[in-house]
Length: 103
Image 1: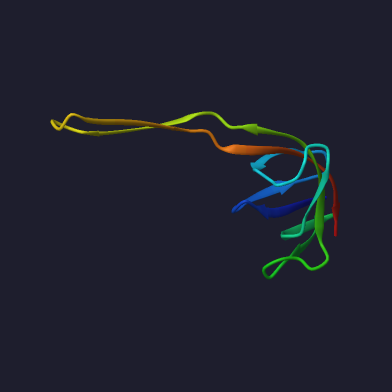
Image 2: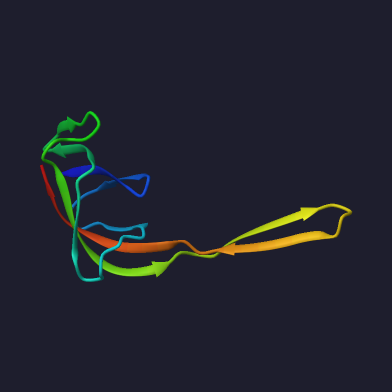
């Protein structure tokens, strides 16, 4: 059994027990979170495809921790002008573990 869910503008294929790094959620670590935007559910080979979401389907997961992603460095330069600029960014992430898929 697996499902495709959408969160943070991205889609993830998950099954029970999977760990995911997703965009930061406003939930404390150790709490449970429910994802209602389920786009597809597969139960024993039978597919349920939503238009746009599957009704009454949800994915329940536990929030394990909040962390920062790897540093991404952006460098800008204009030749012969003496202009150089370095910008760094670290994305805020949440690590979740899927408990169950409710179809």
